Image (cartoon, rainbow, N blue to C red; front, side, top):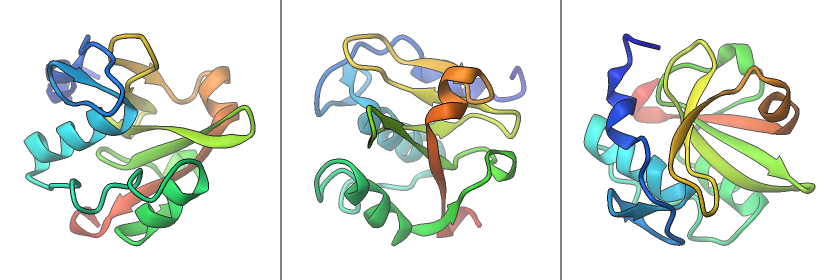
Length: 134
């Protein structure tokens, strides 16, 4: 993961519902912040969470790019979505092609986790690669 040091700029951000700054983020907020600062892509108007929760996040995100269903096909800056208790309810952004992703868990600081671990692999729903990054 050392070649992708950009993610260090987004570690340990406090959790804040609806936040998208380094002072506080939720899972969508940390993804928006990383895209804005690292790729100059502003998801503010096309935010996957604006429509609502759950599968609506995916439908909105698909409008922005291509859906990726296989974990092995993910690469840096792909958005990743997860099911929690049977609903699509969490997202992150890939840090590299080796399975590490940046995300923000409720009431916990932002972190990088391994998508290939049992917990996240079982909950992976899909990835989205933005058209600008294809």
